[in-house]
Amino acid sequence: MSVLLNRRALIGATAALPFARIAAADARPISYVVPFTPGATNDNSARIVASRLAEALVTSVIVDNKAGGGGSIGADFVAKAAADGRTLLNASTGNLTIVPQLIQTGYDPFRDFTPLALIGESRSVFAVYPALPVSTLGELIDYARKHPGELNFGSAGNGSGGHLAGEYLKLRTGIDIQHVPYRGSAPAAQDLIAGRIHLMIDPIAATYVRSGRLRGLAVAGNDLRDDLPGVPSIAEAGLPDWEVQGGFVAVAPAATPGPMLARLYTAFARVLTDEATVRQLNSIGLAPRLLSSEQILARLRHESETNGRIIGQAKISV
Image (tube, rainbow, N blue to C red; front, top):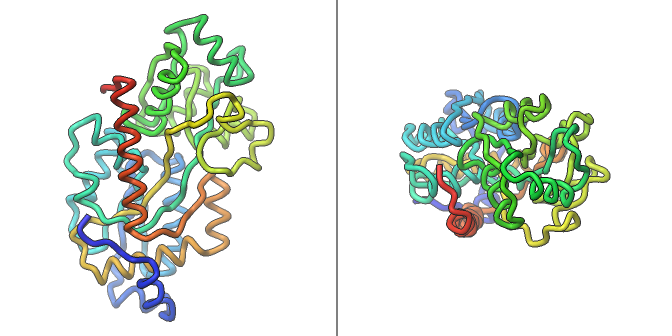
């Protein structure tokens, strides 16, 4: 990532500017690429942020879904886009820290992008089809041990956070469950509700746990659990030191000029410190964090190292 942005310097230099000045006389629309299908947390977070970002930059921000390849198709599109600040990626951290370790991608996550914002640390909800005769994570593990190879789990695709979480669950517990990849979390959730799969570990599951259409067994990730009463943390459910983390990061092509990156960074900073926006992101299970590019990069490198170790230990391949 060729240009890194220091939070304090940028915000200090631009805090007095009205939103209209951030646009810098370029009113062309911005394409905000989501590398998954509509309806999932990645997509929902992008739509929340895009409307506010459009106000900050005084230009249209259009959410563009480019799904497939565990998010690699959309990520590759942005990596190769013109580096003019008009094409951005709402990446899941899995796009940057899992997928490139499993498949050959057309992008290098640490060379081809510059991070702009940590849109939100995510939480993963362990949810099962309600007819499955389990009510706790411990009961699920016991059931899977008694029925090896009979259960499956769905995810947003090969290399997604939900894929890694399911494989990590297998590694931690020794259970034998099969992975079913989808082209996004939304279709996986619909199949879980219909009983065509048994389990998913994904932020989107919270919506259906609240409505009673799925049964929640545990929550891993950030501390947002007030909307899921009775659902324990992953540690409380019996698996402390859960290592699979995730979130969503806004990035630009690495060659984007510094002045444009500074304007974008400042706009994202204003969006993610807006109380209404924070509440909306919290409502879909995301905890936004205002970090510098350097801090985001350090988190991604750490996550990549952790995920690489899990991939090796679990012998994950696609």
